[in-house]
Image (tube, rainbow, N blue to C red; front, side, top):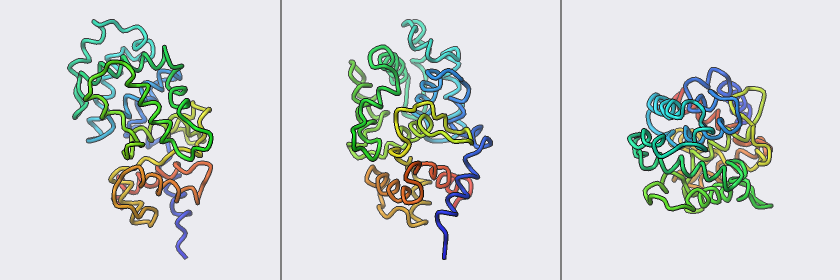
Length: 254
């Protein structure tokens, strides 16, 4: 009899390793040790984490350099002059207008809402089994101020049906903690048990081939279905299998 859990566990251990970090957007927050620097670097890296991986890493590193490699200090103290170089930043459809607003909004998250962790945590309801409400609440806070309408598309809304892949990935980075050291586990107020598995073309294709996902669209309903099935193998830490699905899709062309 085929042991799907054993197969996934094997691949999880293979890809949840230090060698994985360098080629992945998670390498950007790994440049830092201060909690707030990790949070901000991770959020910005996750925001632009689509498309060519080399381009993602180059542009995320460019953002860190523009912030003098002290992201928390920078966002709290940046003047209009300091923000001007960001106005020409471009990564695919994320442009300078979006970038400048994001930096201002991140500042507000820290000065008005207790930081990134609390901004997500405030949306978690007692009986939540996923992070949909947490992400939706964060998004609401993020766009409280006057903002460019175009920038809203860069913070996904699971309650509107989006798979919110990049934010699910970001939450995995911040919340999960194990002995392998890829994910940071610096947010201890949110349980790994309610994390939702990041879902994109690669992981979705693999999940369907393995019988973990029947829904054909990569939307929030699919995220819920996939994560629910992964909870059969590890209800306390279901999204650890993101490493397996992603690795099989990207590195093994499964």
